[in-house]
Length: 151
Image 1 (cartoon, rainbow, N blue to C red):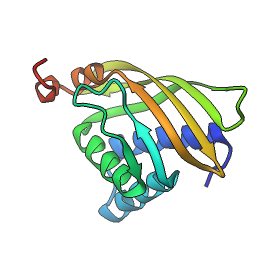
Image 2 (image 1 turned 90 degrees about the vertical axis):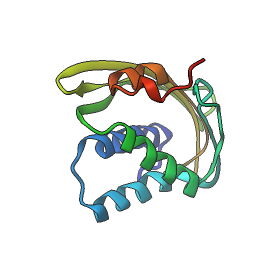
Image 3 (image 1 turned 135 degrees about the vertical axis):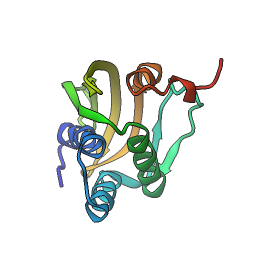
Image 4 (image 1 turned 30 degrees about the vertical axis):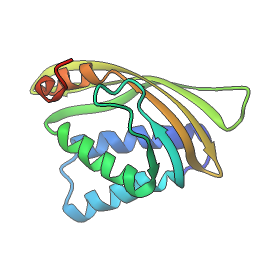
């Protein structure tokens, strides 16, 4: 399990990519979901301030596990899905900023969705994160614009 803040946040993005693109057996999928949830503290505070469905905080590993399972199900069909960008350290050794794009392709159509994660990692787990993601761009990439609220 990674412990440096930059490695932890990269492991989250890489795990999401595996969930979306790999044809995992159910036991392997469950193990990956457990691994992803385990990168967070048991009591954490993860928010998605740009979510068009509202910013419901994720406060436990169980909530994060459900979040990852649901998100990866909505993103099925990608031939490629990976985080490309740079992790920047800050003056606070616990805080990192990951500026990246989820890039890939769905049914041969390329996409690039900008993201910025601002995360606090303590003792090898994420205790707080603000994940800024272009949700409309992600819905467009996967042909799911109709899933977004009308306004």
